[in-house]
Every structure is written in C-alpha cells, then in structure tokens.
Length: 331
Image 1 (cartoon, rainbow, N blue to C red):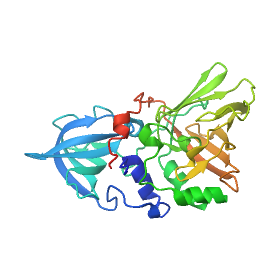
Image 2: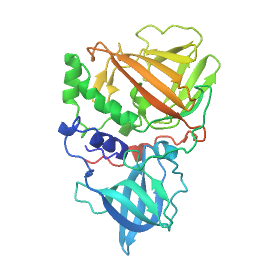
Image 3: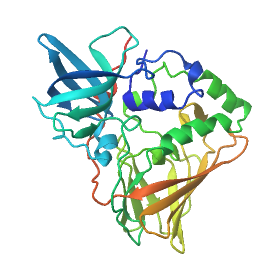
Image 4: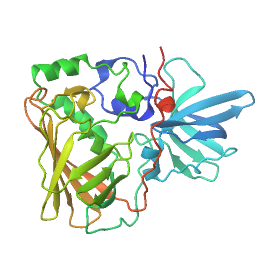
C-alpha cells in the first residue's frame, strides 16, 4: 500500500537522506510546475484536503493540500478559495504518471493573494507585531521547522539493537497510524505546527494539540503515575511548577510502532520529561524535552524548540476524517 499524505510526504522529502532508503514516493518533490485554472471545490478536511481545478474545457485536476489544522495557523481559512476563483497553483507532479493529480505547494489568486496550502513548501507566515503574554496558558503554534528538524535528528539517535531493528524495518510505503486517524505521541506530537491550546481545568492543565483529536491532561494535584500495567496511548502526565516553568513528566505509554519517532518504536518503559517556559520577550515559549526508552534508545534524547504565541488562532475543531485519511491509500 502507498500513502500519499501531503504533510507526511513533505516531511520525509525534506528529511532526506534519513528516509531515502524507504522506497518511491507518490510525488516528485524536486520538480515544481504551475497550473492555471478555476477553482471548483476546496475540500477543507483533516488530515489533508484538496483543491479541485478546471484548467481547460473538459480537464479537471486535483491538488492535494495540508489539512485545516496545519494551514489555518498560516492564515488560510475555508473561505480562502471559492468556486470560480482564477488561480495559479504551484505544484509537484505525480510519480505515477497521473496528469490529473498533484501535490500542492502554494496557490496565488488573480488579485495576488497568496494562499498557503503546505507547511513544508509555502513561504513563511510572519506576525508583524508578535503578541506578548505573561502566561504559558493560551494558544501557541510550534515553529513550522520543528517537526522536520526533530525527525531528521533521529538519524543520530543512539539506539539499542531493538531500536536499530525498528529503524531498519521501517518502510514509509506501508500504512501507518495516521491513515487510521491516530496521532503521533509525545514528544513528536508537540512538534506539529498546529494550534496548541493550553487551558487550566481544575486539577489538570489540558493541551489540545489540534492534531488527530489528540488532547493531553497534565495532572497538577500531586498524584503519582499509576502502576506500570495501566497504560495509555498518549501516556499519563503529571506536572509541577518550577517558578514560571511548567515541568511535565509522562509515563505509562502503550508500546507503539511509531512511539519515539515515525521510524523508531517505543516500549512500555518510555518516559518523557518536558519543560515549557516563556522567553524574556513574552512572545515565544521554549519547549524542551528529555526522552528515555531503555527498550529502544541506548541514550536519552534531548532537544529544545520554540513555540510562537498566537492568540488569534483558534483550534480548528476539524476532526480527523477517516475517508480523507485513507483517500490516498492504493493497493
């Protein structure tokens, strides 16, 4: 089976040579062509959507694009493209010889408006005056380079024999959990450039990652982790404050074929310690983690990334659509 998911494909293409040995991809990401036409439909669905164009009488094409969770933080909305809009689309062609199927990079309307449809390929979205805050609670969008950097860095991780076997056996041409609407787990989940909403809710802080319906509960009431036999897909998280830094300890994960990163599985002893703290300017949050997993990692993995304060961005509330997620699976 072959997955042609725009964001995941883009991630792998930009992370070469890490995944170079994993076979052919659906699109030729090294080639960019332009298509002119009129929009007939803009399918606003997670985890990926599509833009349908008529390019000439009798010829219709479909352009695969990132889903709402990924493109809304870049300023794209369901109304950004309307039926009848004349556009120029920058796309990459199919590797399967299809002349009606393309990978979207960005779309420019007749009035010059740039519609960003790909986190990986579109020009950067910048706030002219980044809003400041004095609290880590609120809405944050991880820098869009974080996930690419995180995945690429895993090439240098120190692995146990089981971890190396997992890496060697990984094949991107096989179906994976995202096609079944199951999100990645922490810390990979925290790298997606989606609207991450942090809210205090009594005895816990809730993190809505806006990706595949993933919501984390960080218990702040002093409780301990349950017994190791009690396991959760996203793990069990307990938190504490160290001055203005939120420290999160997460354990009790299910074993997961993509639990440490897409190409490296995780075991039941996986543990993640995360630290979230504001920078001095109040517009950026520093997100750092230490990942340990004695079953698959021979040394801890540590890294620090940045999130941007984006109070104007709302969580998309677009559920993962199974039909959309599996639309590009081919026998």
